[in-house]
Image (cartoon, rainbow, N blue to C red; front, top):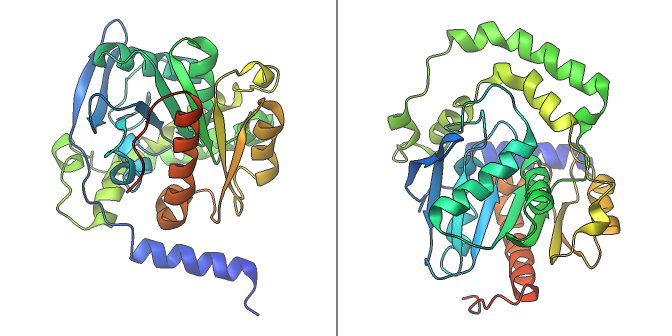
Length: 299
């Protein structure tokens, strides 16, 4: 029998060389958020459909994290992505704080004229989604929390110091790399792997220390029980970054939350998209239905 870790490695290699095709990627725009800055936002799907914000993981962008999922849901949902602060074409600010990222979500909703929405987040985006409800409960109709938990590993000072050291090491390397142009970020005619690398390198790797600090300050364990909107937790059962036991803490802490499983690791939203999309879609439909939002049947 092939060891489990070799199976996982083989699957990852296959996905890198045969990635999910970057097709039907929505066009975006730089949006002015009054008093906050400018961020890259995509807004696709029927304008009168239930709105869902897809919030991305650390070191990715809104499109890089969610591009396989968007076409699967934007026939029935109004789907919004945005690049978080310091990521891709996100807001440039003096500090990186997930609370600011959560406030940015609502600022985008204000500009787009969206009153209430489902906040769906992957990894770091799951923390931002929780904080969006915490800070603006009247705006969030439901939560879909994917491959995430009530705290991150950088909650541990040792992990945080490791991120800071890595950031310092990568700073001179990043300065030598050519900057990714906005025009190239919008170009989807090249091979998916090339497009994805451009998206990835649009976020400075030298910020790892600041990202670690920002993530390390997040901890929702003391107020999970207060979340009173329909919530689904999509658990990545092979996850070694946010282990399933930590993801389970969300289910144990949020009243009435529902569990959905994906057979994949921490990058399953992209590297295992065909395994991720069905349970995510089911989770989103369940939350929207429980939030008394009318959603047309799939298919």
